[in-house]
Length: 221
Ligand code: E4P
Image (cartoon, rainbow, N blue to C red; front, top):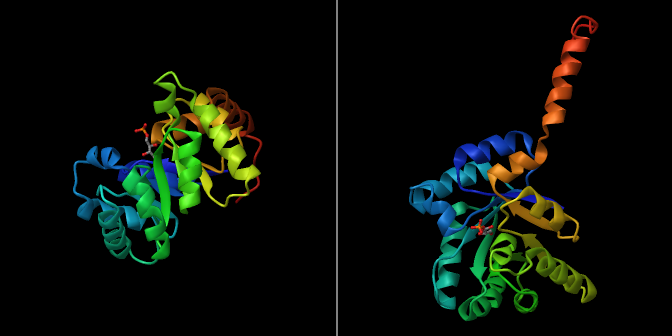
């Protein structure tokens, strides 16, 4: 079970990398827009922070040929060290782009996945990851967790090498339930990652232990 941070906020990423066992960062155009900087300014900073971990960057183009050209340019821009994934929405052109990218050695995360069958088609096309949008599904009276569960089951049953990257979480409980489906990885916002690793009782306990041990721990270190 891997955790990625769904943010392009440099301060958030820096803080998370300082303590959270993260495997990388995912972004999309909306997340990038929140930073108010063009990609050419923000990407080098992301690359610095991410190091050799995963960086998933979404393509903006809407035709397969342009998605490929865009992904090739971005891969070159971010350099060899980063574990780069081109995020490709599962549109008709997106499905067409996936095998083209794979042929060029570019790893793909199929994104904006809403159904089990979209995920299977993306996996057959050669996607390395598929990203089902849990919260956005729940918000249209569908069942995000069940969609993830079905995808995980089929990938396992059919021995498909594609991995599931659960995405679009708005609550800690959604992340909790997705992790119980056997989902390989999740990408989660800063706020939810911070909330899920903390508990007020843990903080209270640390405070009490520190107070109780203060005059007893006399071995120098
Ligand atoms: C991840 O790859 C997606 O871009 C992201 O999780 C979407 O999340 P949102 O529904 O919070 O925008």
